[in-house]
Image 1 (cartoon, rainbow, N blue to C red):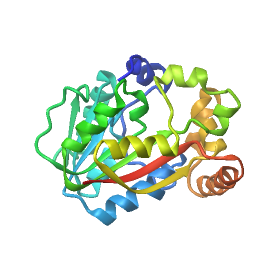
Image 2: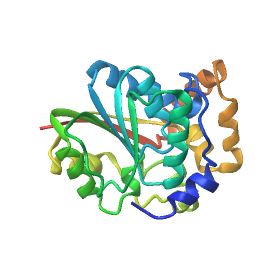
Image 3: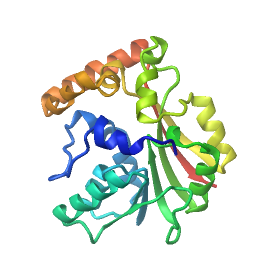
Image 4: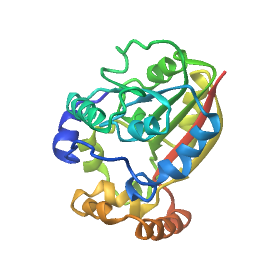
Length: 247
């Protein structure tokens, strides 16, 4: 995985201890609730592996629903914060947090579902990562993967180079490329969607306006999501989400 991830959590997003669970109307995580969570609830997995879990935000929410989670994160800063949040939220029975490089982490048995959200673009050898995920899923297990798109509107405008460098993006993908790599790793793609319009993407790419995300809750979040979807349909989306099954 690319370097600089400590700086990302320490300086870029200023990761802090989480005192509560995210809301379904939190604009920063709206696509998790719209696209990822329904898939998880439909599958109802017994064991979930969250790769590149960051400070644990999504793992905490899933653990609060009763799912058994193993969260792995390369950043020492993010892992320490996640462990402190975990104690505060009292979710230790459902969630374990580990600080490790993905390539070095020793899994404790096969998982029913793996989350790899906004991670693959940080990895030096993405093919090796997909193979490792495949090896640690049970047969018929599910991978939910998301990654930034190379044909995103802000990419076409030449406005993401600084952002990609600061957050450690080594590459972006298009639909055919990510599906091909998943097939080569032994997965069959069940679904692929593109999401995140230019408004939502801008709030993450440009830190000076990113603070607006904190205020986009409840009906404001819903309104901006509708507008963002319209922009996505008109000029293109910024992120791809794939659901794949292990052969």
